[in-house]
Image 1: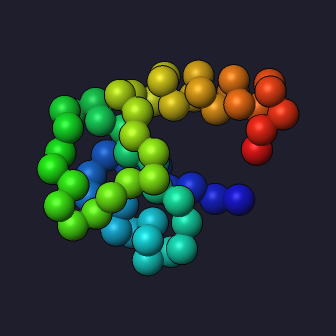
Image 2: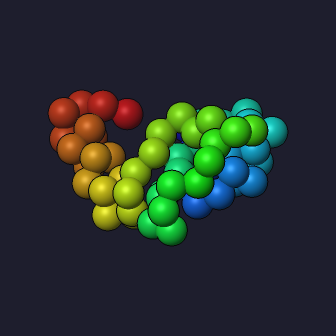
Length: 61
């Protein structure tokens, strides 16, 4: 399973075009998501990794 990780609406649009889920890291501040709505949002990469490791430890994918 693939996910696109990025920090802009263009990354979200690329994920949609590729048919994969999008993850936005908002370390530059929150962008207005008028034309693209990410599947997941995190404050930074550390928050994303922490949640992914916790999900894996609980048997998630």
